[in-house]
Image (tube, rainbow, N blue to C red; front, top):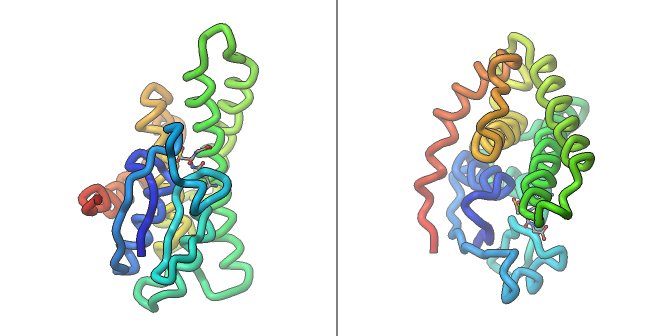
Length: 202
Ligand code: GSF
């Protein structure tokens, strides 16, 4: 399998961590989707990464679709409960973590526009989503060791990627001071998830 992506994309990072947890073999192909000559739309008409190209040449996109598929490929390290309410709860954690990322990326992209075209209101609106999401995640986590209680799941992977991205792009946010439950979880996740940074890239 080939994973098309970039090394700074938090959604790509989520897929790479799942690949590693599931002990699946794959190659990473770096693609700059913002370059005018990007070929990404050959695989994903939405022009976004991550995109997974499978052995038969078929492509899957959107990180949520990709990780759900990967979890079915091997019984090693089940990351999603098979069915029911627990499965929906893991996916809801993933939705909030990815939503936090969507809001963060809106701000990052807005700030890349010429100063005169930037909307302070738009930026504030998305900061509001970031703060509300981390607050909700912190409350839901409570004293639990992991998002879903005692088991490490896709929820923890998604949350780790979201918080890691905040540290990368918003180092001044200082979310740890108010969100102490998340800070405790993130320390644990950073140790478990940082190995993906050594994945060979072609
Ligand atoms: C989001 C992918 C995405 O926004 C997913 O795969 O989970 N819901 C999707 N990817 C960005 C790269 S990044 O900022 O991580 C992307 O490819 N953007 C290109 C564009 O044209 O929006």
